[in-house]
Image (cartoon, rainbow, N blue to C red):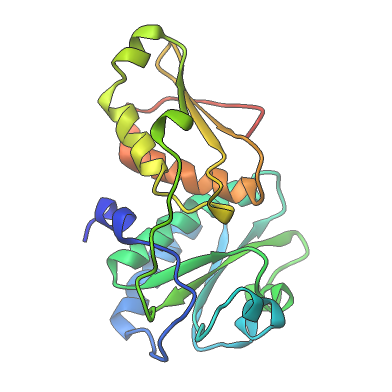
Length: 234
């Protein structure tokens, strides 16, 4: 399974089998975590065989069961922490899918107090989120989302009539990205100069969503085709 196939196959899973992650699978995931931490400066930890984070009333409210393995995503306190966590967290989520693992992004419905302890935070660090991971009892289900015309725009009339293939592929990949409550409150605009402007139009967990969706767009469009235009909305 390659990364694009993982995007198609991956759905949120909240119920997990009582199985330990295979040693070779755990080692491969840890190696990718190490690469992400080195590139991003984040502090992502892979916690195995620990149930307290998902034993809280909030976790039961979120309908989680059997979660014994998870990622805690943390880093230095900064305005872009959530965006970086979303970007690199989704990279790990899709990598895990290629290894045969299921996952679910979790911002609120778990014990954040316990997660903070597991993250081994220093005073200048903050927890961004948690990702449940393991062998799902199901593969999850797809949810109906927005159409491409609702999440993209064009400054140039000719681009609107005949959009570049790489941009369309980026939009298609972005529409496969998990977002909080499946809101998909994002917009990509192809500027006249060929740059791409990404905006987050409100919603909960907007920083995480921004990073998750950006990773998907980059994979679909191809980094070699992209020149991002920064936005104050980021």
